[in-house]
Amino acid sequence: MQQDEIELMAVKCAQEGDQEAWSQLFEWHCAVLYSYCLRHTLGKQDLAEEATQEAFMIAAHTIHRFQSSNGTFRSWLFGIARNRCKKLCTAKTRRHGRENRHTKQQPKTTDCTDDCLGLVQETLAQLPAHYRCALENKYMSGHTVIQIAHANQISEHAAESLIRRAKDRFTQIYTQLKKSYIEP
Image (cartoon, rainbow, N blue to C red):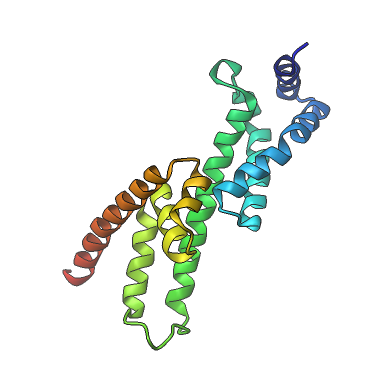
């Protein structure tokens, strides 16, 4: 019997409530899912652990929705994990923005006021997750284009293009928000 067939049998048993089958699926996929989440959070272990845990919890509660005709169990699990990574990164960005607005620990050399910082954080929060992550990784975390390309499993040229599109979209949203704050 091939590994795919064994896994499919375990999934069917888990869908019927077999805890042993679920434990086996967890054991087979936990390490690789964590590595996947670690790449999507660019090495942020706390976010990767949380995303892995949440992905397995969601999968356990929704395993009855899995259909092998749509792909492998692993790809289904990775899809859940990718969404959790995006959601956690979004939440962290928003939390970071609120913290920056409420603390006065900005260096005196900055030209940006608290209102400006709030506007930047709000703009980041409104960006699609892949654009926000690209900009955060490039400008906040200081990652290189090569690192961003590797983390997203894309070419350097595609990473440069992603960053350029993200900057363009950031500018559009920022301009709209700035106008709405200035003009009542």
